[in-house]
Image (cartoon, rainbow, N blue to C red; front, side, top):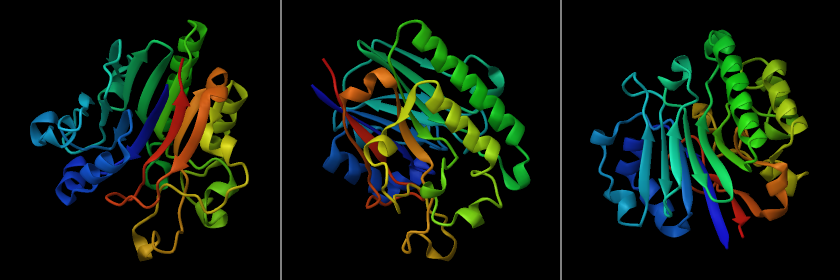
Length: 259
């Protein structure tokens, strides 16, 4: 059975629904599981018909602060269990993680923190990184295969940014941020897009709105789908949908063959 799993930072769910971009993408792509980040909304602020009429059920993890952060998981087949958060209030109040258990793997949709202007939240971001890695490591230690996806708010290597020298001047490309991706890889987690497209350049998932950078493809690849290395042989495709509008990010995803 081939399952398509997608992630998209919509940067405001209500706006993406108003323009119809989310509905159009769901209707044409029909992924089996969709993780949305930075939804900036609560269930009472949107009409779920946009996805329910297409056969999706939803799980929300909203931030305590209105109009901020938040994640939403849309699923065709109901997971065996769902959990929100990492179990730490300083992270969970920002609505950053939804976990869904399926028979052959555990899936996490995550919105990783931005370090902020002048790296004012870098400590918070790095602490979140550590907590998240400890969490997925615990899942693997318990015998679970793992898929995690989302906006990690970091580009891993120079091939993942259009202008590396410019990127190095701000957060999202700091050595300590990039080193965490190195640790992920060293501990057995695979960046699916890069594994299947090792030399592909100009493949970005985020474009700053400044000076119309998306039209010129001056971007960053900061949205990922990772799998534990035992699942890599089951990955049949890994893709970036840069043609999908509605946000300053675009959807990314994988096709996973399951028993």
